[in-house]
Structure formats: C-alpha cells, structure tokens
Amino acid sequence: MFGMGNKGGSSSSKPRQQDKRKTTSSEKRTTVAKQKPYEKQTPSNFTPPTRDELLNAHHPSSRKRKPNADQLVNVQDYQTSARSQLNKSTYEYFSSGSDDQVTLAENQNFYAKIKLVPRVFVNVSNIDTSVSLSTGQKINFPIMVAPISSQEVLNPDGERATARASEAMGTIMCTSTLSSVRLEKTAQESKSLWYQLYILRDREFTKSLIKKVEAAGYKAIVVTVDAPQPGNRESDIRNKSMLPEGVTLSRLLTDLQSETNEIDNSLTWDDLDWIRSITNLPVLVKGVISPLDAVLAYRKKCNGIIVSNHGARQMDTTVSTIEALPAIMQALREEAGTNEIAMDVFIDGGIRRGSDILKAVCLGAKAVFVGRPIAWGLSVNGEQGVKDVLSILKREFELACTLCGITSMKQCNKSFVLLPGQSLQELRSKL
Ligand SMILES: Cc1cc2nc3c(=O)[nH]c(=O)nc-3n(C[C@H](O)[C@H](O)[C@H](O)COP(=O)(O)O)c2cc1C
Image (cartoon, rainbow, N blue to C red; front, side):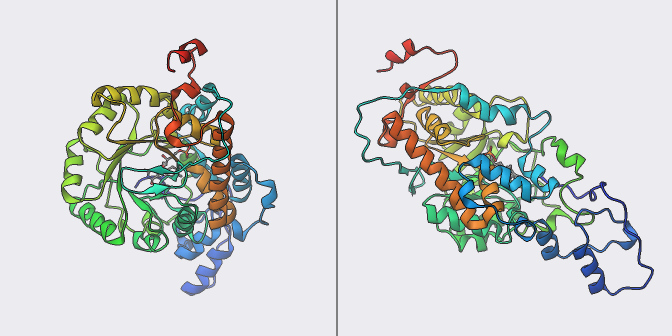
C-alpha cells in the first residue's frame, strides 16, 4: 500500500526474552504497550498492539516536555522541535524525500535564488491578503493546508485538529485519501475542506468514496496524479517503515477499509472525464510539473491545478515547483489567449517563509499549500501548533507584502521578482 509499508519493526534492538508463562491476550497487550514500540519481536511472542496503543506510542506529547512556545518563532523551529520529540522513523517518514533528496533541497533552495524587488512610497497602512477562489470560497490569506496522510500518528486528534486549526485561521484544508480519521469526522470540524482523491483500482469503491465526500460537505475534489506508485524513500526502507511488525497500514487508514484498494497506476487524462461525470464538485489536479500537462488540465476544464512534485517524495531530480511555475503560467496564458486564466493555479513544495509565498503569488499562484510545516505544528502542539505555524507564515507574508509595497493580492505580479538569470533591466520593460 501507499506510503508506509508493513514489513517488520526496527532491527535496532535485540529480541526480548520470551516469557515461558502462558499469558492472556490482554496481558500480552499490556506487555506490548510497555515495551518500546519498535523493539524487534519474534513471530512467536508477537501480539499486535491495539490501534490506540500504536498511536500512543508515537505521540510526542506522551514522551517529552512541551517546548517553550516563545522559542518557536519560525517554521524551522517547529521542525527542530518536532524532530526532538518524534520517534526517528516517524520523523523520517514525514521529513524525507526520495532517492538522494535533490529535489527536496531544491524545492526550498530555489526560493532563495529568486530575488524580491520591493517598491517604495506605497501606502501600506492597510493590507488585504484575502483571495477568492474559483470554487466560490474566500480565504483570509493565500496559504492552504496540503493533504498529509495518517496524521493521528503525530497527535491523537490527527486530522480533526488540523481541520479545526485551518477553519479557525480562515483557510482551507485538503484532507488525504490516506487519512487516519474518517472523512465524515474531519468534516464535522470544518466547513472549508477539500478532499484529495487517489483514484483506486476498484472504481465502484472510488465512486462510493466520492459520494461520501459530497455528502459530508467537502467543497472540491483534488485528484493526485503524481503517485502511480510510491517513490523510492530510502529512510523508510532502512527503518522498515514506521510501523511495528504485524501492523498494517489498513489499521490506520479509515476510509480505505482494506489494502486491496490499491491506487490505480493505469490512469490517463480520460479518467479525469470519468471523475467529472460522477461529481458536480469542482475538480482540481495535483502533481502537475510540466507546462504541457498544465495545458491539458486547462483543456479538460479543470477548476485548478496544484503545481507539485509531492513534496519531493516521488521522482527525484525533477525540476523544483517554483522553478516550473513561470513556464506553466506562460503556457497557460498562451493557451487561454489572455492573462486571465479560467483556472486557479496553486503551488506547493518547500514553502517555509512568508517571502516564499509572496514570490509564488507574484509568479502567478493564487495561493500556496504547505505540507510538512503543518505536520511539525501538529506534532509539537496539536491544534494550537497548527494555528501557530499558520500564524507565523501569515505574519511573515503580511510583513513581506508591507515591505514590498503590496496592499492587495491583485497587485502581485512578476515585476516584484527577479528570476535567476534575469536582470533588473528586464523588469523595466514590465512596467
Ligand atoms: C508525510 C507526507 C504525506 C503525504 N501524503 C500525501 C497524500 O496522502 N496525498 C497527497 O496528494 N499528497 C501527500 N503528500 C504531499 C503533500 O500534499 C504536499 O504535496 C507536500 O508535502 C508539499 O511539500 P512540503 O511538505 O515541502 O510543503 C504528503 C507529503 C508528506 C510529507
């Protein structure tokens, strides 16, 4: 199944001495709960922990003192704090990319290569960062919450906490198909959710999932298309996944029911027509990197695309997302024959600063999604941690707008950014 494997525990510690006395099943459970969760167990003495035992073993809050919130002033601080609290294999599952993690670094690093070109003598006493989306929704600032699987591993409230925090902050959370909380339960916590869909081999099941999504009040469907198969995440292989032996992913994933629900890797653009034929919800495509695919999505009349390389967890050495964005916008404008493209373009990957968000919006993104920063906030302090991470990014973004002389999102354009290889001379011609 996707993401986390189920092929055994960590090999770091020795097998425990087996207790010769016969034990009841509940005694065995207690034993498992007390021992370290990743301790290697022989098949003969192994009793899988209950779902709660498994999740409790992962929750950072149950192990270490809460960090002093005053010291957490940026996203990196949250990552460092989450790292110190999470189990190594859990941290690596959430943080790592594929292969040599070239794209993982580049997703972040490319933002630093793009320079901002502020304007001055602009009245910045009032800044409106709100954005209206083609789904008819309005968000308070152009930062949205990316789909991240199995969030209960990070906090007992999992996706529910993230949904509450996103709603409270006035933005949208996209819930993963690989969620650890039932989609209906997450929907009770927020009225502004999108649903990330993996199209499964079992089409009837996929259809029933979409019907549940509609009934639960989700506002859009985001079809992820860059993961016909999981990427090569070597830390997960070394750690033999983050799950103890005998625990399968299906015990964490609530909406998929069984591991036979595999993601379909035979999908083509025609399958998007099928999705559109069975739902009236807006449909977006997540995982577009090539301008050619962006144009195909536009021709399919998608409501939006998310320029994404899955947080660098799929193909390594792909172009970073922010590097791809200008060419994608150019291709779409040429296809539409106008600068007003009837499709929202979003971006994710490596966004850790308010200035990154401003660069993305100036290069044409309606809004950005953040993934790992949300996971770190959730790990460190649950719902409040997610709110704090979103607040930090919001505050940094507002400051970036203020210091660059931007008072509304409509004013964002490429005259505020200098791409690698461009000269300031070229900017003059954009006035
Ligand atoms: C641990 C983890 C789990 C993820 N699970 C999903 C998922 O279930 N579905 C999906 O479309 N994308 C998934 N993603 C990708 C994110 O939605 C998003 O594209 C990526 O995290 C953005 O990059 P960032 O983490 O650098 O912000 C996952 C990413 C991570 C790190």
